[in-house]
Image (cartoon, rainbow, N blue to C red; front, side, top):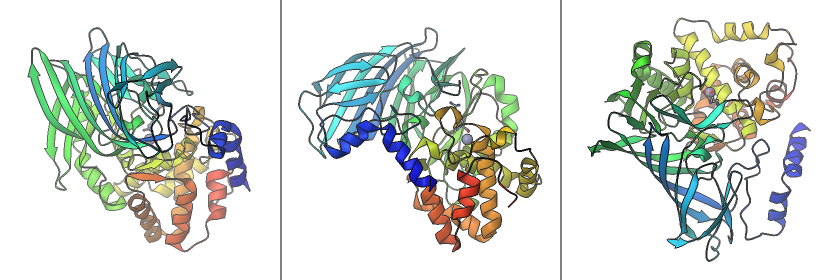
Length: 458
Ligand code: ARG
Ligand code: ZN
């Protein structure tokens, strides 16, 4: 059975995790065992809260940072890792006592003066500075802190968080965040969640942001630019903050105007919007090449079209509130957000989802669309490939036509509600879909989610 094969694969490629399970060692592992990004995240602790204080000078590209992590040990810990790459660490304490540390690639290896007991709460404070820059993902995209001509475009999927703050950088660990970001007056620093305050003194402005619902590190942002800001509260009480680069303002305006109606429409389909804040960061960063569903406030590298706005906001339910446990399951994010675009078109005078499906299905078996199955992309280089987005959406469409509209939308709402602020796996989604629809769906999932090649017509 393919599922068993996949599980074996994970164990074989993570001997460290295996050893750790057999004989608990006082060293936290350097990764959480994700086969696509083996060094992402770390073993041995969970971060409850990040308090990040940043000062950024867009002129020189210099960043001064202080990160205070409030964490809990999940095993006895004589040593543990954080994910942090590039910037210079100038100080590190655990529970306010100087700790030993060394750098090893993306791992910041911390040795507290005294070992932490299992279940013990602790605080890690890291001060750091330097000139941050992006990492290059396996698909060739820049990821992390990406300097622009007037600030920085900051997005971290899947691994860029480590370029600007030390973290447990895997979606399995979700935390609340506070951000205090100081930039030269005239610049705006936009992070996740609610804006608590904005103060200008001595030609500098400090923005304080709070993301209270749990968030994966890759969804954090601290985007800096010269932005025009618009703030309002929706009928549902959601605090909206839009920041727009003036070069994108004309193209962005008609699309951003639709944000409240898009969020209401998505809430009608998927259940209540999961966060207290929403909005958009529309930057002018033409060489980034993508938008990201940064939590509560997607970041766009240019003025988005309506479909992109619908897509990134659909991720607030699927990807942000309900997080991945493994990057291999990425279709749970991208297939769902793409299918939301199809549904939006269908319900707003565009093509029906069936028509979109049929047009895709017409592509020959040799087309890139069928290159790998959405539920098993094979490597980190493929997680943002067409099969994940388009064939992932096709899998949902087949599910919909198999169980019927009422059951299908009940499934989506149950998925968002039962895993809200948490995690999900493809196997859990399949079980939930079977439970809600009362149908056996293993052959459907096998064919449309897991099996390579172009499936037979459903
Ligand atoms: N999740 C983003 C979206 O589909 C795409 C992020 C692409 N990131 C990358 N490093 N290639 O909206
Ligand atoms: Zn997406």
